[in-house]
Length: 423
Image 1 (tube, rainbow, N blue to C red):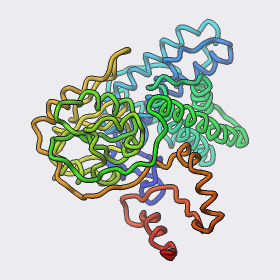
Image 2: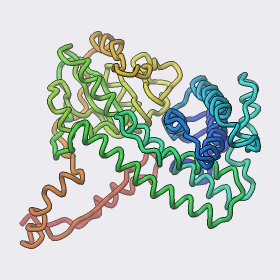
Image 3: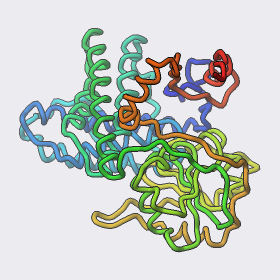
Image 4: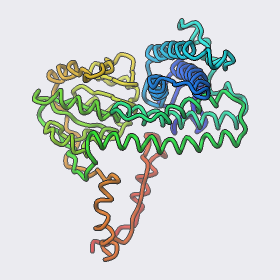
């Protein structure tokens, strides 16, 4: 294997035996093959767009979801990734058949399809990975663009779940991925990387609009970090639609809901505050989940990324559920919602009722919800405090510590800040 897409990569160069995230070499290879097939779809779609043909929106959404499932800590399940590859082959063939009369048959090899047996997939995967591009500079620019497209895809998928889509996002996914099959100049490749940044901002704005339209603008909120006496369900990830549907399906059942890690911001949205059984946040960041999930005692629902492999001592696999692009061997996967209906979380609720209440890790409250709309609403007070001298400095920190030694940079910065006088 060779994977260098995350900050944990071995020796800051690339994982070659097993991922530092816990990913096996077979999984990395299959993810490479999935991306290779997505490049083929992109080649066809890009040519179709250039010919003035309309590519179905479902194709763009599939591309986004498939790229999303290849990000770090989202999918460790080889069988599931093989299913994604099979779907990609079908999407690729269907799209080609619908437009071949207008785009011709001169396509990159990735736009073809081949034997879909597991042995054939593994053999193919060995020749299409990151290192298939020999020139280091070309490889770096192509992979940087692909990583950007993965981030765009994650935001685009979340926005699409809430009904917000933009054709320019799908079009850039097509053109961007297709570009990695061409011999472009350095300037052209750098231009596409910069374009990815521009489209990422567009996509984040679409997601922000989708979230705030559906659930209101986040508010400064005190979030409980203690536990109640009822059994609970712990939900992590970024999918607010899953959060909403879980809260509705647990209302009045005697089961409480707690957020973990990436789902913490859900506590700040006005729409979720009406649910009294949303008890608060449990545990620490994503890399503490082996310990946190163990002591939580109830079911855990992973809605997007940031799942990590279990340790041998962990016993929560029979309480672990995944949904969306997330998959983990042995965990129960909650299927996607049927149009017009909610996902069915009844199995999770039923299991929760048989579990003990969470083990208390800490007590008290934490404050969050300092989103852009909330900050702007307080701008006049902040400006007045600066003018009066009540506020003398601002410290802006953006990022998070990691789980390996040497990755506690932000904690060190915070601890090193000069102490302000109490007056």
